[in-house]
Image 1 (cartoon, one colour):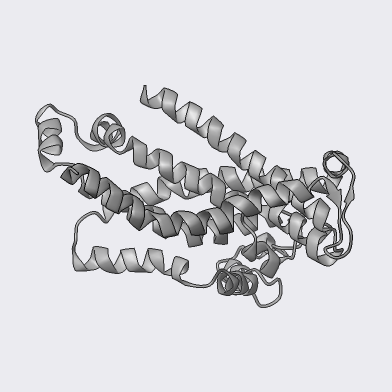
Image 2 (cartoon, rainbow, N blue to C red):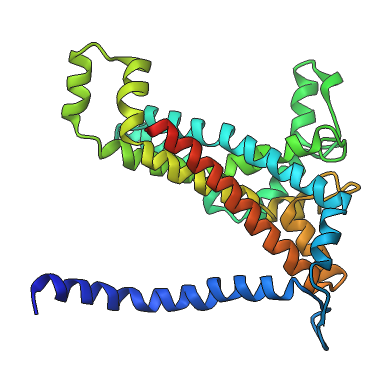
Length: 291
C-alpha cells in the first residue's frame, strides 16, 4: 500500500470518532426534531400526528413574526457591528507589540466570560435607576437622553444588540489577524511599489486575498445571531410584551414553559431553515463579489 493511501486511511480513522459524535449529537437530533414537528406532544405520553398543524400555527402567530424580525435585526447589526470592527481592529493590532497584545486580550476577554455574566453586567449598565448608562448621560449634561433601555419597545432591541456585538468581536478579530499574518510580505511590498497604499491596498489587495475568510466569518456571524439566546433570557426574558423575543427564546418558552415539545420542534426546524436560507443568500452575494 502506498504512503499516500496509508496517510489517508490514518486521517479517516482519526476523524471517525469525531464524525460519529457529530452524527449522534447533531445530525440525528436535527432529523428527530423535524420528525416531532409533525406531532402534538407534551414530552410525555403518546404523540398525536397533526401533519403541518404546528407549522400552520407558526405562520399565523404574530409573536413568531415579531421574533423573526428581531432576529433579522440582530443579524444585520452583527454583520455591520462585528465583522467590519473586527477587521479594523485586526489591521490596527497586526503587529506583535506589547500594546497590541494587551488590546487583543482586552477585546477577546468578553468571549471568555459566560454569556450569562455578560447579560447580568449589561443589565445593570442599562438599569433605569442606578445604571451606568443613565449615570454617564446625566454627568455629561444629557439627562434628557436617559431611558429605561430594556423596557421601551422602540429601543430595547437596539440596546440588546450592543452587548451581543461587544462580546463577539474578539473571535473574529483573532481569525482576521491569523488571515492577515498569512499574507506573504512580498505581496504587500509589491502593492506599495505599484502605488497601492492605505484604503486602496486594503480594497484591491488585502480583501481579495482574505475574502474566503470573510465569507467564513459571515456564515459564523449569521448562524450565531440566529441562535442568540442567553443574553436575552438574562436581560429581558423576551419581554416586555414579547418586544425582545427572538426565535430561540420563542422556541424555549413554547417548549419548556407550556410543554409543547412538538411545537417547539417545529420552531427549531424553522430556525434551521431560516439560517440555511440566509447563509445561502450570503454565499450567493459573496461568491458574486469574489467572481
